[in-house]
Length: 124
Image 1 (cartoon, rainbow, N blue to C red):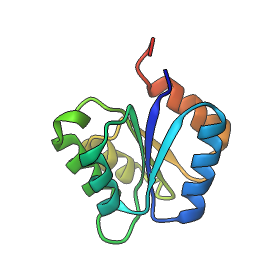
Image 2: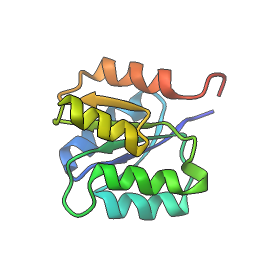
Image 3: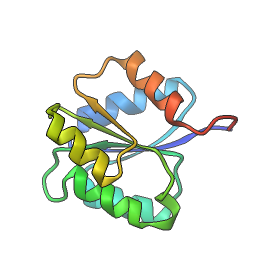
């Protein structure tokens, strides 16, 4: 079974990089250019994992994370928050908002793949 991943980021190059990396590893990736677009996609489709940028115009990653957790379909979906903000307070706020994992940027591709595989439910 192919794992479906939603990547939400306001940086088009980051989205392209994530999509290329993950699709070559057999993941089905849907991208959304920002928080509002990400929530719109999440309302229409189901995913097994979300990659979420923290700093975005409009809705922040914290706000998007809270909104996703309020959706029944995303209550238990792993959310990996990716961010250049690596302070302990940011990490704590991300986890409090519902993030499963908080990864500081820049992220090595192998570390991202390792984190995704560890966060996905076993046996699927």
